[in-house]
Length: 298
Image 1 (tube, rainbow, N blue to C red):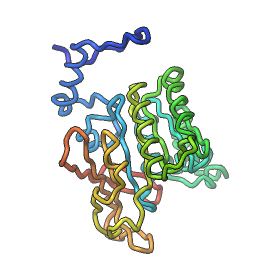
Image 2: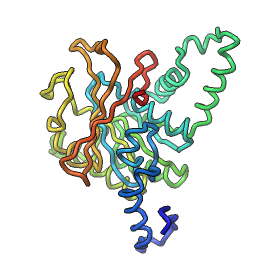
Image 3: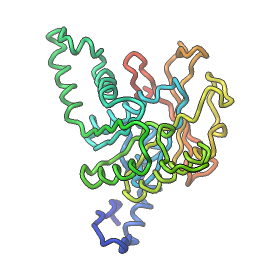
């Protein structure tokens, strides 16, 4: 039996059936094929892809990040790995930073050079050709950035559907949950609104069969754990712990003042999966602070 899943063909509304062969193939890929080749969209981080088999179609991944841990750097490192290196189509919804600022950060991270130096043109002859090649790769990447502030979740859902139809996007990244709005005036408290927003995003991920990475900054310095110790998933809000298919928590050791610990630059990505309750995986990564970039731990 071939392990490759069948192509999905368009079916009339109300007649969306999935063949048992397709379902068996998906099951085999997800459970037995991980040791061979990831069947989802690879993140570009070897240990993460080994643990998850790539980002799976229709699943919601939440990445909880405490302020100062490098949320934007991790987001752009993922976009770099998937869109620039592997030619996947990635859409980024950034309510926190403008599309220009996100692009500037991506350029500096990919080239390892400050934007001021690149714009000045004061490069050595040996640098120019290499920089032009790197910038060309960025410009050709299938990265789509929407920087609408306070984005309504209903509008976000429709934009995801549009991206799926028109751009055949492979992955959606949302930065970040707490900046989204429910759009329905009622007496709900903010946690209840956020829970409803997460459920809507999970629903549209399943509808479009696009994996969605939703960043959350619900983790704060006052959540009950020391900044230099590995945090526990137990400190996260219930709507963060219980809603996604896969929950990740990014932890980088820092001093209380916010300065990185001098001994090494190892980052830990803690992972729990809805289908594997009670099991926590720790993925080590490396953070290169000078260019704000995450890489595999070599």
